[in-house]
Length: 273
Image (tube, rainbow, N blue to C red):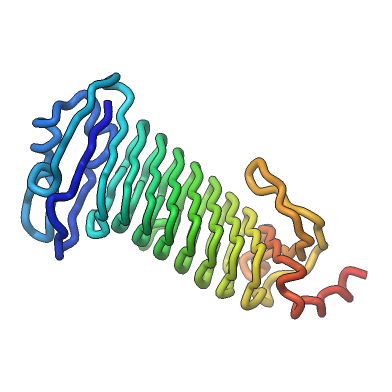
């Protein structure tokens, strides 16, 4: 079934939207969906208070949620979803797809921080920019995303993939500082500029910086130059300097940095002769 949600108004307050999920909406009528609980600031409301709800006729097991309009103050859309599809024609708030294990989310606009935090499966695609901590662990936790794919066509903020354990994050714009900090495994690809400190305290995994990087941390050692590198099932043309680290944490992770986009790294060439 297809459920279309149209915002009735723009809220000044954060909205907790954990019930906006294909798993929750499955086999429910428009009336039942409209009655689902949400929070707007410290006030309990329902889905129907904030959205016009329309349910199209189709298989009740195949759930697609279409949100027509900006919902930048709505958090936790797709929380723990395991199937179905969420399509947002606009911006979304923080914690998009938090702990999701399956299905797909597509956002035409921007997403707030913590998109894909602790996800274990499924796909999130953000056509605009994303905030900080994409695919990261919660505060105080050491368990970041453990599966799935996040694709960001714009820019992303700081500490992308913090404590990431598995999965793929692709960023086709720029990224902030500390991309892949504490990464345990998985792959992070950045096509644009990195603000630096990528891979700090990483122990394994792979980070590919295809654009300019502000620095390479001194706790990484040069290992090789590769003509290309594999990202998921695709090969990205280089050449790339290959660094191993973070040696300060006895790490064995791989940091690939574009050679033509970072001529200041040519001083490492003598160590490869």
